[in-house]
Length: 179
Image (cartoon, rainbow, N blue to C red; front, side, top):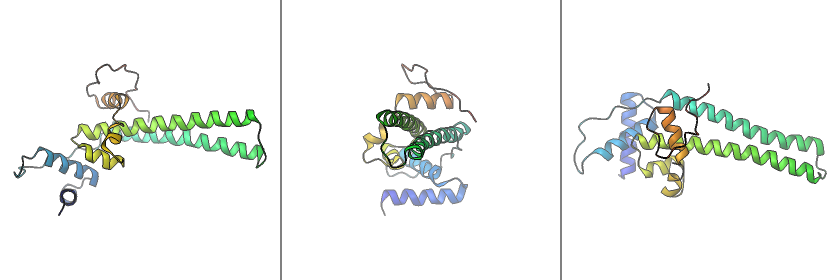
């Protein structure tokens, strides 16, 4: 049996014992294995963290905002189709469509990257290794996964969780989530 399969089996067992979700159990098992001495048995399982309300609210708020940006980009396309149909549009119409659509899509991408980075920072702070981050973020390499751990994401996480701010932080990131 591979190490990954053993980790998954242990996570399922912890899930049945404690009632936590699979990701939390997998993270707890990974942290337990990382802290265990080579070849030694683990004395006790670490306490499983509950999802912080700030992070839950963060996901809700960011997803809502991202969906609004995507909706605006889609609506701009619908408006142009409604007004012009399949006919040609003027340079000014096309430029306006490109401007508004790209603004909304880039705003959505930036907010989504900040959300992914903040959650990845939280995962790393709770003991996840780079391979687990890579798997959860579904990237091809560890370097791509670590790219999500930006200074903005670290500062955002610190503000939301009350942790230490990263050095040279300019405190430009918000520290609360609107509900």
